[in-house]
Amino acid sequence: MITSEYNPPKLDQWCLPPIKNAWFLTGPTGSGKTLVSIDLAKKINAEIISMDSMAVYKEMDIGTAKPTRQERNAINHHLIDVVSPQDDYSLSQYVMEAHAKAAEIQARGKQVLFVGGTPLYLKSLLRGMFLGPEPDHDFRASIEEDVKNFGIEVLQQRLKSVDPLSAFRILPNDMRRMIRALEVARATGIPISHWQTQFERTPTHCNQRAFALGWLRGDLHRRVETRVQSMLKQGLLDEVKSLLEKYNQLSKTASQAVGYKEPIAFLSGKISRQDMEQQILFHTRQFVRRQEIWLRSLKEIPRLDIEKEDDLEGIADRILKTV
Image (cartoon, rainbow, N blue to C red; front, side):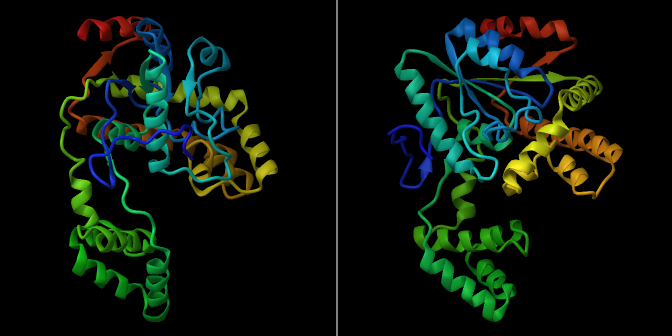
């Protein structure tokens, strides 16, 4: 789903390059990105493009902690409320739309500020990504027929002979990804694992200005706990109940989001309310941990350490002093 008639520049036939001439503000869940981003956007004359894989879903508001209507009125925000909760939304869709939206904003003479904590979105914008050739449905159908007749083990062995690294990385029951790996190797003559490694290295300078908010672990966990409690008080459970009543079933991505999968389990009678609340907190902390690991792997992003809530008000000025 492309939001404008924009043909993004390509490194080659199947790759998207890094975003150029943009600002990035990231950090783990609960680190204060929204507050800082509004201040920074005003000071650099920017519009904000969300970098949150759950904020793309309409009507999923409380559990995703979207910017408020007042905050969105103060600064234009993009790629929020893009698709229905029934729809899947892929990484490639997001990156294509982000390129288009960034070009549109820059054409108006404004700065672009990406804000969010979804690691794959961030990395794909900073370093580029491999989109790959269009699906070959006839090829896929023939492989699926072979799997039906001879078992998935045959598919695994075929992938090992073509792309041993992908065969090692992909789970043995993930037929979709194994078929895609074979499809890419067949269409391009190069294993998908080789295509993907070009985006592992730290990129060359693209006039990107990226910064990450950082807290001590204990302080961040306390902020996360406060955030989860606030979401529950705001009516997270009622929001999920309303979504299920309206749509009956959410997409696989939406239904597995932290803050939504736990209420869904509670409403279906699988866990108690106490277990639901504990699991939301536990899973959010797990996600925060994964975000921090990802951010450490992106060496091009300096960390801005924060010790107390009042420090957030001065972060935008700290950023501007470094550029």
